[in-house]
Image 1 (cartoon, rainbow, N blue to C red):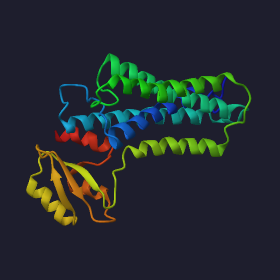
Image 2: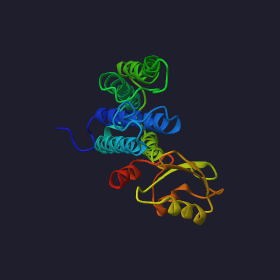
Image 3: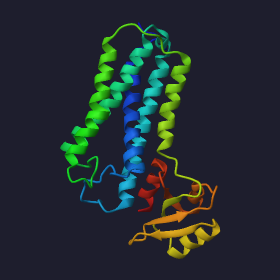
Image 4: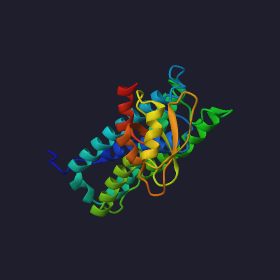
Length: 255
């Protein structure tokens, strides 16, 4: 009977790779490039940024659950990480999980459900879907499958395991950190706040109001150099720049 710490880590590492694939998409495509949101393809709520960011936040929350489940399983299988070839098998499982996320996302989200495409504004969205699938889905899957078939290799040492855990946690944290410093940030305040209150907050933080879109939902602030964007959360903001699931859950209450 397999004892504690001696279980195989394949499921754990697969889940970690899957969650890293989700964080990679969410941070890069939803927040940095802003090519789409999770539910950009739905007619209902397509123009409602509150709805879209709330959905993105719930998506990131799901990735947190998957990542934490993987880390818990990895802890239970920790003794097997010292076996010969564990490093190769870990890399294989991570790559397979990462690629599997992108294959599942392409098939389900892009084509079957149609909730979003890689580039919503592209003249040929299918070409972008296929390119993304090939580079971030099929290629990692092929490399991972090739590694899984080989034999030998070093164990997964403690330092490498700690780096892996840190990388997963950092990926999740990247979904929750807004930009800081003197760069402009996008801010959404509580639905019950007036324009006068928002301008008063800007004066209090010595920030400049660059503008807002037509509905007055999303505001652009330019903070003074060195001012933390997180400070806006103390003044009624429910979303600042690249903020993650905590802010988005607040949106559901405020909407």
